[in-house]
Length: 111
Image (cartoon, rainbow, N blue to C red; front, side, top):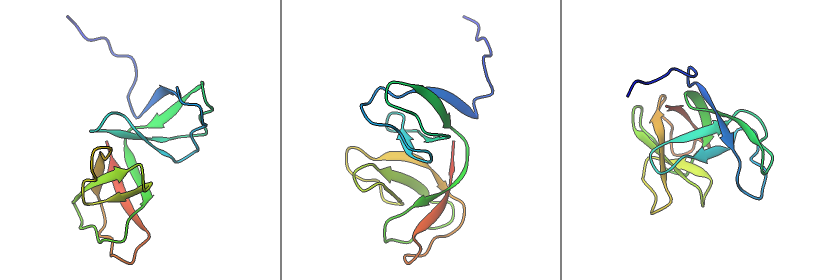
């Protein structure tokens, strides 16, 4: 089988199959090993764009995150952390600038 190029892949079309809108900037898990970031509001039942690469400031938990550390998203807490949360955690990328425990956000490269 040959592959056919369809798009660059920096963003993808994503169908919101949930009953709630997805707000701009929301982290959207795509399974357990990838996540995207909503490029705009995606109303329930509609299709919108998700960023699949780039660096984003994300709300983090109260622990420090080292430069280069893997970063995980915990949907229950709606925060990222260097510690993989239990069953619903998603690997979102790597930390591109060290974040101190007192920092409220971390710079995360997704993709």
